[in-house]
Length: 154
Image (cartoon, rainbow, N blue to C red; front, side):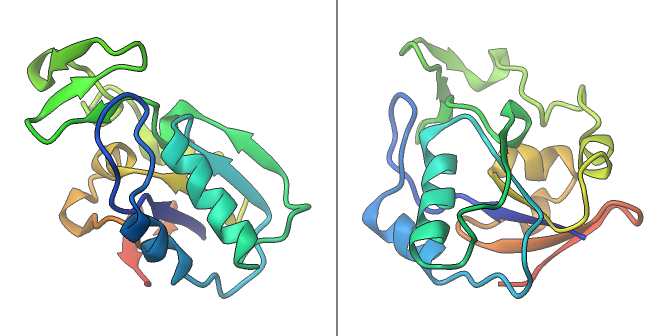
């Protein structure tokens, strides 16, 4: 199994971080088994997931960590549905090709990871996995790469 934590409620703007309530959403999540690898998206909010889970004792500090834009980038979807890029450029969602745009084999990526990997990720990856219908901010999901299924566990 692979686990995925979606970022909590966040601010808007360039490389958005969590709101106070968003951090509280992450703090309540509890991993029920030891994680073998953590993969963190490249945006600030994904590193905040990791830091919060370390600070709360939910992850071991010696767990190996890797970074991947496949888990989420520094770009942010604004409230008006425009995308703001890391340099502050704003583009229409219609002009933005994300990993959730059916051009990325997300399940192949998930299958390449070791068992008990934790992904600190966001909605783009959930969309690419065709799990947008269960995607909620600040939740923990269990992914089965063999069956290509996912379920919310917290």
